[in-house]
Image (cartoon, rainbow, N blue to C red; front, side, top):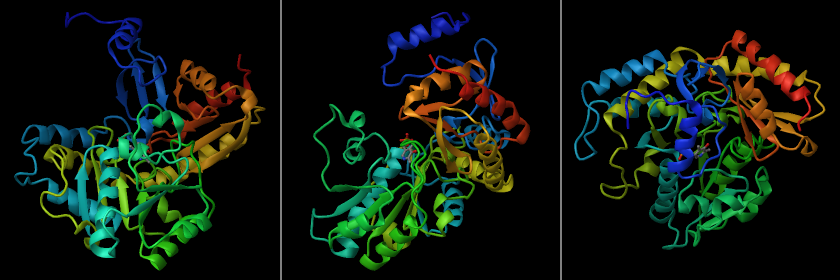
Length: 408
Ligand SMILES: *Cc1c(COP(=O)(O)O)cnc(C)c1O
């Protein structure tokens, strides 16, 4: 293909639809550049990014310190595999351990791989430490969960579309209602190894469980020797106005599952962090990944965490989240049912009569604000955590106007 040719948005969309598998239905905005909270399309239009790649871009697009770490590391060493050691991984381990208050860390690349890791570790802990009979371990999960797209993970999804056509499924999981601690208590048996939850459900449409739910899970896990796995791939690293969403209830899980913003929107990096007793069940050869823990990812992740901490992005998420939610609450639109979320993880729940959130997301895109409809009736707002009041003041009138207008 001619490298000099510049493609129009329509040509690029046509190519994508022709050659790409149709497993997504993106808005027709063809981005070519990003900086901070802003995205630019191939026609030169500017958009405020209110999705942040599902919270993978918490630090903003191409944060200079993260890009510097990427370029610097790319100029020295990118991949050794874990057959050899590298000089970046130990520093990454220490940072993640200190940030999570955990003793040990296991690196992967994507969120789904880190979730798979947490499930494998929980099962192995169940057999080797708790003493569950072979092949009897159960892991509790909750309805509305989203933990990724592998066959084992969709085995406990209750979203029909995620499962349709992909069976047979992996056994060993029980799905309980989300937010119901009594259901957890009733479901625990001597064979229960773990319960895995998102502290706030992202893909389900920013679903916040009742206050005290996470604390009660912690207590039940302590009482019954069950591991509490917190999937903070989306809620973690500042998104909800705390470093981890579990902190809203002063709860420390047994395992943190991290991803998305761990790679600063630059490079896929994920991890599981836990105690030595838990991650210590793994011996050389039990589990691994060719790219997991590579020096390029480790350097990018270390810089991404430094940016979060040193630029006070958690506090900013708390303050800007409050500001955004206060102003959204003033919008007197007939289409809004209610608004929920914490920090800069916000769901605007529309009434069913509004005809779905997709139309509103499209109108906002036309006016320069990119957000995502999810589960038909929820508009999700999750801008990068570097966002300022001025930038929110750009978005708010557009959000208000679109929400006040009538879909057709
Ligand atoms: C995005 C997400 C995942 C999956 O991460 P991938 O990198 O897409 O595999 C898992 N859990 C939660 C809560 C997520 O939001």
